Image (cartoon, rainbow, N blue to C red; front, side, top):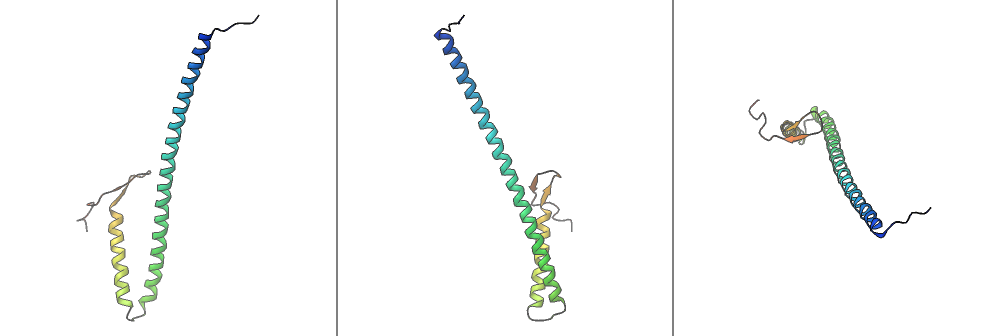
Length: 117
């Protein structure tokens, strides 16, 4: 035996399917939004890693330059040694302003430990 479906029942099913499709699209949009946030955080973390690598390379090169300048008393020696020392002081003060919570959050505290020298 064949069942006959009336038109109102088909219309109700179509409405249910349409609502479910809307919910699926909405959930898909939410998932894409979360993926975007996760990707943005990963990019930010990648930037932090690149900054740290660049600073490490810079400090290594500066220490090599300091070694070259130590025994050499030329015109460039004193100003360059002074500039390297000033750079290291400024960098250490800047790094002390960044607070890290131990997980994945950094904040800037511009007046942190200013008078603790």
